[in-house]
Image (tube, rainbow, N blue to C red; front, side):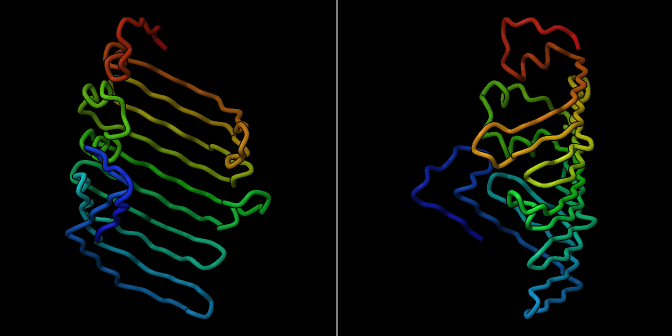
Amino acid sequence: VLYDLKYEPATESGLDVNHIALYDISASVPFVDYDLDAGHLKADLSKLSVREKCGFDIRTMSAKIDLDTTKIVVEDAVLKTPSSSLRASVNMDWSALTPKHRGRMNAVLSADFSREDVLALAGSYMPESVVKNYPDRLLTAAIELEGNVDHVDVKSFGVRMPGMIEAYVRGAAGDLVSEGAVAADLDWEIHTQDLSLLKRVAGLTGVNLPPM
């Protein structure tokens, strides 16, 4: 499967959103129910596997999907590569994406990303110093959000790379799609470990970071 915007320049590495090439696609859908008149789809997706030319290799993906013209519900979504994993559940009104429509969204996601997959997906968008020094450790992230584009509550958000940094955020943000500044009231908690590693990854040569 190819998605190719020939008028857009290609990136040298990483996922190129303008030139996507999927291959070795396999999927099992043991249950699907589609009501054409109501525009309502229910499906159980299991054992989806696919590879992208950047090297990102989904070995298995599964989810329970329920969507219609007003909302989407994704339950028990699981994605695994040879070295990473992701779990997610989403319950969202489509109107949650439109300002002043008061739709609601709840999303819970947790993931462990390996160096290989982070660089495969995002390497072309990272500074060279980050790519060169990115450690061979799992990046763990977990987030729970509730709200809409007018106001979203960050129930919890945490990022952790063992031996280097832990960061946790709670609070709220608003006007997410406004042309002006995003309004946010967030509480941060950051703990650092190996600051020399953090400096190398961030390319901060000659900078002294205080421990946090």
